[in-house]
Image (cartoon, rainbow, N blue to C red; front, side, top):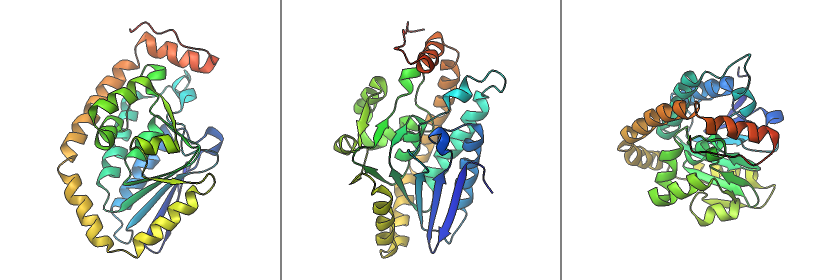
Length: 259
């Protein structure tokens, strides 16, 4: 059904797997659209009460596909991309299911935005989490500003975004980005166990609480998504962004000029 995702359902649990392992599940336009479509289908599935998200292969997701961004023959359509990212973030946040992200390897950039949009974040001890858009002269997207603000507040969110620091799972838990730490190699087992405990809980009441708490924040999320779309499109035209992606490909330190 999907080219870049796997969706499995068992009892009241759905498992959504990002499935571009050869690219560390980096997200191209196809994956972004499929992820938005898939989440919307889950939102309308009353038989599902828990959604698990994970990545196939070595990582959860390395973020946006930088190679795709640099492909001049098949250019990245930024306006279309931002529409899909808005759909992903808004649908993920408003799902009438409890969502659990299982993080191993890297969850970077857009990958981390999606992780932070989940209700429960489970990460392996030495997984690597980074909101590292700044390294290529961009701003967080996929609701990254909103999800960071919800988790750690505005002052810490600004610092984390501006510094683009990489946190191991244990460090990420200490600052509030992660809820549960698992031993390396046991992240998925831990996530499955957590889901099973939820199935033995009064899930209808838990989902109702989520709906109540999230309902008042939807307008703010929509506003931030609009701002992210405008600012990201503008940042894509800057010399700093071009320098950032060239330095990334050339494996050197970028020389930014603030323009």
